[in-house]
Length: 66
Image 1 (tube, rainbow, N blue to C red):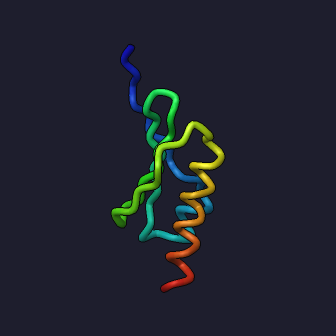
Image 2: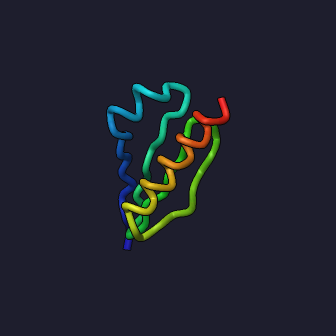
């Protein structure tokens, strides 16, 4: 079975607050994999809310470090 890859943009508030970190969420079959424009990538998860939360935690950690 072949799955199409879908890209989901980050929430608008996240884009405005952190312009240097652009998160994309890629669907790979039943999994969702977060990736950041800085090179970070999270593990693919079946739980979409968990994948989104990990991406948000990455952006928050990077903004605290800056």
